[in-house]
Figure 1: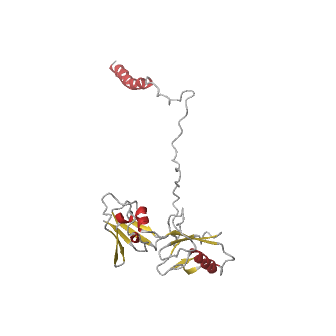
Figure 2: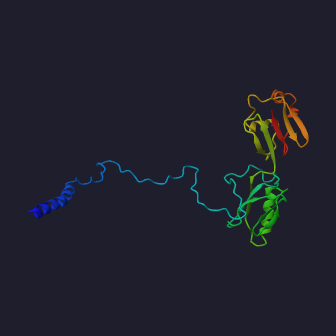
Figure 3: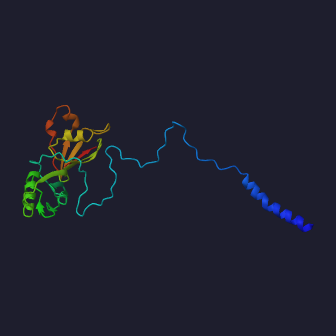
Length: 233
């Protein structure tokens, strides 16, 4: 009798968890969108906005110069004289390996494939264009070349002190003192308009802004030269 009771107890202990599991409610099914409701699209990678480009990860070619190539510097190709450290764009039709940006070295030359060392400093972009054509003509038949100035680094003037935008400025075309101050955003409220100084080598040239804007002593409104440093106290 005792053995029979023990077997009943063991059977009950084994059946109780099984019955409890079988009575659990089924897991809810994923909710379906209501009829007519718009479907939510899966997350997508954001597209580049206007003016933006997706990075490609391309490494620059050996000797290639990375610079802003959207707009060439506003220079006259028949009059601007190239100098050391200027960045020049040379485009050769159907020759992508030759078409790139080149920096004029301190010795006044630039080096390009096939063309070798070409003297660029001291000549205009139009003259340099002819020199590149002559150098490439030894290896190519009637090369079509276009030369542009991308960055003017050889001819600059500097402004520091109480102006809107201090810093270096390219001297591409003739610039007077008044024009330079205007390009720099004008004078600040607490600028000393009567004691502006242009440092030109060892020379100190005084400039009285208050007089010039009144039409007095207009000879002070000189044209700037490369290397001039305007100090506005």
